[in-house]
Every structure is written in structure tokens, then in C-alpha cells.
Image (cartoon, rainbow, N blue to C red; front, side, top):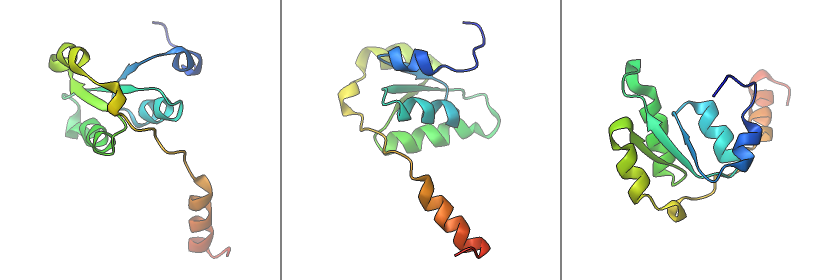
Length: 104
């Protein structure tokens, strides 16, 4: 799969997305309303992907595994257990920022 500027079209057509646990990849997929299976790269320094994947899993939005459990996870996963990801509310951050810098 060659480099692409955007995966938006592929995400729209997908029935399931299997991705690493990069924040951008996860959020873009979840905002598109697609089921997401996150495969953790355990060799990353400080394993920050695991932290994000675990939290999104605790919140019911993704399933996750590592490379050695991918096949087993695909065979046993139940996508019906996943909850929709709530839409972002950037206006709340803007209001907070206005208050912090004194524009309110």
C-alpha cells in the first residue's frame, strides 16, 4: 500500500479497520464510525500505544491485541460490543482557552 495523503476514502468503505494505536489513526477511524481493532507495537519506547488502546478499550470503543494474538482476536472478536465514539466538542476547549488567557 503506497503512501497516501489521506485514508478518508478507504475508511468510508471499510467494514473493519485494523490499525496501530497512533492517536490520529484511532481518532480518525472512530470519528468515521468504523469498528477498530488496534494492534499494539510492544517494541515502542515507553509503549504509549498500549496506554491509549487500553483506555479506548475500557471506554468500549475499540478492541486491541498484539501481533502474536491478532489471529486469535480476529477469530473470537464480537464487534457488536463496541460503543460509538462520541463526537468531539472543540467549542468547549475554545471556551476554556478564552477563560485561561482572559478573553472572557
